[in-house]
Length: 371
Image (tube, rainbow, N blue to C red; front, side):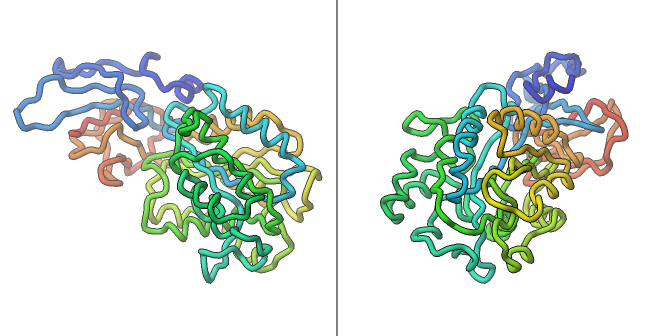
């Protein structure tokens, strides 16, 4: 059941008993949520009554969701050229069908940390590189506008390293840009500059600080941050950057201040051996282990799809009973688990239902709501 849940999240494997109401008809439209089956009322009870949906979920221990957000934090330093062939083959492997869950979306930023006193500038420990503060992924998600701007302001030799146009900041795995090229390929172009400091954990926490007050991830998503680097944070012998490195709890606090997510895990494709830059301690691997994430050795791996497949399996398991609805709910009419009413709250402007108590065992969760 588990591979089927994660891989296709369809409604044809026995957990979709019909709604006990002849007015409700099954629909293949699952919207943007995590339901595995849905029904809509075919005949409104009143002329002005909004549409009513009922959605079915699996709730309980080790429950997966198809709503998964993947943020890739990629090292763009010059030393990455030593593993560039593996990196490029790895990115191409992610373009194969079926690598990501049904409702996955992706985004990319880089590992360059900012000055804690001015988040618009690179950290003083980095080298002074023309245009670095305008780099497409510096404390921002790469998108079409950022790539176009960088090509305008960067020196010609660096601008030429970004020939592909971008897409929206969040994109689907098979999405392509206006040139017909995969968005994932366009957003993983890297400048290969001697930036000197590649502190991905610091950059992630600073991006969360910089975007405070906005929702960074989809409500109810299983959030997976994937670090890809030939070294470990901070990438340089800097006491200042080591002091800035966040803990997992600090990252969670930053996320939960503005986002309602079902889970949060960190993963790493980073060195487990010596192949490029030296490193003192495997910081990405440490935080990945703490968050129940997945790791792989960037020095040897060429098929990233196998790693992302593992991340899709483990990273899709929710860590709290938060369920993304297919459409925003104007009013949640009922929530039942195996036929019994359960207590819940509606959050993120009607986008998710959050159960008060974690189910002790797996069961069938039904949510009926007005759209």
